[in-house]
Length: 244
Image (cartoon, rainbow, N blue to C red; front, side, top):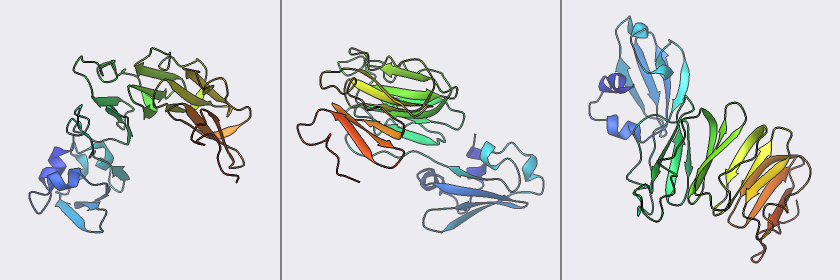
C-alpha cells in the first residue's frame, strides 16, 4: 500500500527505520514530507503528476495531513507477542498478556500472539472477527472491540462469559485482565459482565461516567466531575481510590 512512496525516500535504506516511527505526512506539489519524532525530515521527490498516482490513502491528495503509525513491541515473547507483530499501518494498538491486537484505518482488527493450539490458545488470535471497529481492548486471553455501530464484540477465552458482552449502545469497552469486562454505554452508565466472585460485576456504581477500566478482580470509572469510583476486590486497596 505504501511501499512505492517509501521506495522513493532519500537516502536509501531508511524504510526500516521509518516503519518504527510515528511520522506526519504532508503532501506538496513536488514532494512528500515526513516529520519524524526527533524533528528530522525525509523527502521523497515526486513528478508533477504525483497526486494522480496510486500513493497511500493518507497521502493521496495534495495538502492532506495524516498520522501514520507502524507497530513496535518489546518485552516477554513466550507466545510471539513481540516478534509476531504484523506489517502494515495501524491507528491504535491494545496489548494484552499473551496476545495483542491492532486496528487499521479501516477499522479492521489484527491480533497476534498465542495461537498454537496449546493451553494458552482460546481463539484470541485465530478467532479475531472481521467486524469494523472504532476501538479495541485486549486482556490476558480475550479481547473486546467497540464496533462503529456502537455495539460490542468480544472473542477469546469465555469460561466466565467475559467475552459475551451485553447488547445495547456503548461508547467504550475495557477487557479485564482475567474473567470480566466492562463497558460504558452511550448514556454514560457502567456495565460489566463475566466473573463476579469479588463483586467486580454486580458492584458497579450508578450514575454517569466518562471512562471505565477493568482490572484483574476490580474495576474503576471516572465520573463526570472527574472523581474516581472503584469496586470489586480491595485486598490491596485497589478499590479505595484517593479523594479528588
